[in-house]
Length: 360
Image (cartoon, rainbow, N blue to C red; front, side, top):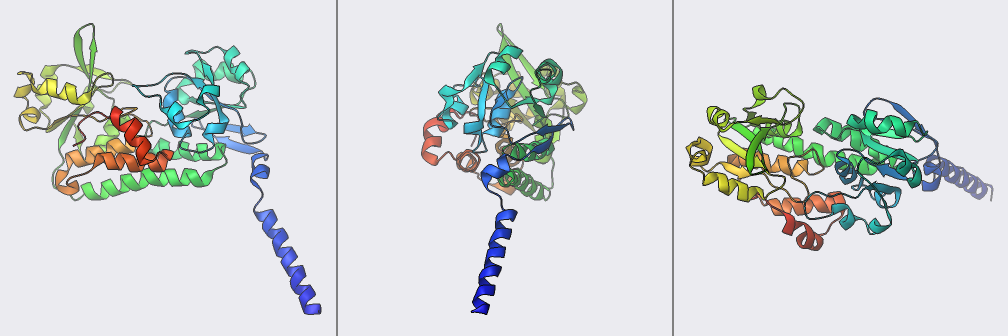
């Protein structure tokens, strides 16, 4: 009898200890949290935010990252009603999309007050334009970057803390880090580093322009991570896209040319350039190495969640001897399933018809 009583008492103590070690979800959400953002600011909140607002330049890319977390559907309550391309991706993900509050571009502070946020998330580049007026209303603001792979890892960890879901953050970070590590290992055995030119193609008032990205931007970093040598580094030391001439392109005479076209079908643009007699003088065109950079909702070259798809595509283009034939449609299906819980049927119905570029 005494032994039974001791066992029962020990069991009660263990159960109590377990309860203290693993508080309930509601208890966790009601506890204060301290966040350190991209500007290395400490933001103290009384509890995990329940009404999150996203705005400012490139806010759609922030939303794409937030919606990789299941909590976003309930807690993100207001954002700008804009989309890139023919598909409203956030509407596809969020059954409650119609009930969100939609902010106007360059929203005034009165719109933020009306949304009743307990946290606003902005790009760090928007701190002066948007952040200062919002913070003046005693509304907490957290800044993110999401511009480079390292910033992606850091900012995803921050979003995991905002949602109280660090496990999901770790899963997502691992997705990107594993892909980068695998590609680094495979391209390191290649005997030749190809000279690569990334060009953004644009048309305005009938005039065609070609631009190259800065050295610190994702497009350049991806080429380097994929085992290529960007030929344009000395041509752009600025903070944005820099226009280049066909004469400069011919002088570089790269092994591979990758054409980004945000407003057109990249495959169509690539075909148009291949048919141009002036472009046919370029070695990359003569040897069949001019490609349209893939895109679906966003172009895969951008610092959006899809940059991991662009990195895999780039590596396979630069090193076919290492990667062989690659099914990028299936790679995209797997990514959307893991990142957004989009099954194959939904991918085939919604995303595949909006996919363009030289995937094969």
